[in-house]
Image 1 (cartoon, helix red, strand yellow):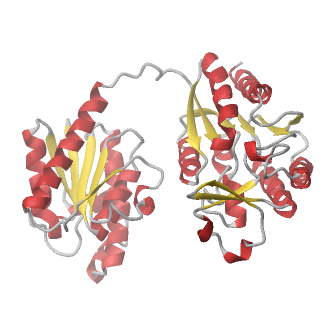
Image 2 (image 1 turned 120 degrees about the vertical axis):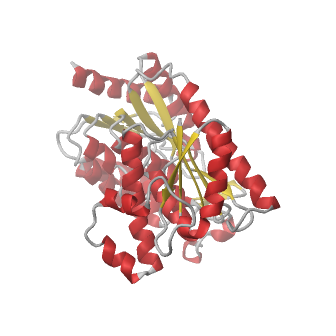
Image 3 (image 1 turned 90 degrees about the vertical axis):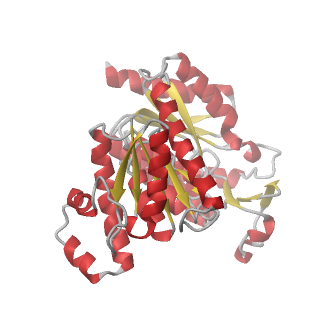
Length: 407
């Protein structure tokens, strides 16, 4: 099996050669890919930077390299590397990928890694790994490993880190090649969940699995929603159980768990059956209480835990959320049903709970129903969202759509 070693060999050739030797000692074949752009490589690659750029087929590449602008070169090589490794993977030529880098090298290598499917072994040793890694990891499963010291030569610290990294990628490739896939033939359903909708999603998941589906649950924490959208867009998903659409409350109001304005779009583009519910649209998420912006000082809060502060959405915000969801759902062309639990859309919005607000829930209900396309089923249930009856209604509605699609 072959492991791609992708890096900027003009500045970090010796370090990548060290990784290649360690991988070779473990019985794997290294494939050295140079994505440097400013100076000549210090080691001989198996795939040159010219071959990497050829995968992009960009008429502007030569002019960009000639200008020797670091930012432009990193952007260019990021796109080219992603194109190249995708083709190598499709051709079955690589079984894992590893890289070492600072800022530029990390940007290029992780762009390439993000182009590879979930489950494909990817390991990035980076000087940036202990900081904010979201821009590099995105919604993928890249393993980020702190370099501790700069990627600049082989020393007593870097030697240990690099040897561990080589062993790590070899282990990942071995594990993937020997892993069994007992449920690989089952069609996939994705579901969105939050702590406040766990009981509902868990029960619906049980029913769907009993019907022969594999259910993947994504935490509605911003990154989780983006990851779910990404998987839906990949074409691997048969149906969507989107019970927890709370990330739209953060997107609208300014919370910390937004999944972006594209949330709910992938299902429309994939044209697959879906169930939509307004799970946890009663709350906007912030960190510690002191992190909440001063403009919200007059609002109603609930301290979920010391690190998480929830803020109740207002009737006006709920009306806008209903309109937004309806407009998103109106673009769906595959079967879709909207289900609304009238007694509570989260644990904390039930009667007697801190976020119980009938006016806000009514505004959400009215806006969602009135803006929804007339031919889309809208079912309101006299239950709380975590009632087993509501969970069963969601599961059965989705199963009905899936059965109709395959009949």
